[in-house]
Length: 120
Image (cartoon, rainbow, N blue to C red; front, side):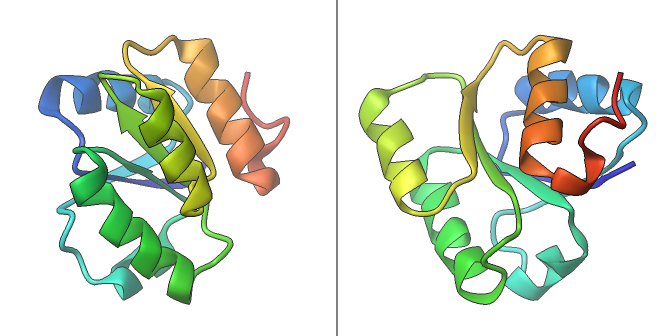
């Protein structure tokens, strides 16, 4: 079980993501984008959305103090430039909704090494 933090993700997308993560029994917490970066210290992975203006400052703060914390950008409007900018800024991955359970399982297994092989 991983401790997953969701931040800045549109409600309908967050609900879908929460459902997929709950099936695999991950602990899920929702945090606002302006959450102090040290509050993310207890997370095993962060899923962030809300567009580049919201997630990039958070990603930069997280990378400064927690460089290895998996950070996945979630979007409903995939854009190649934004995808590359997110990865250049240090995002672990970038994914777009709608999600499939297998996609979320893969993200968890690839982004959180200690959980590889533990999900169905």
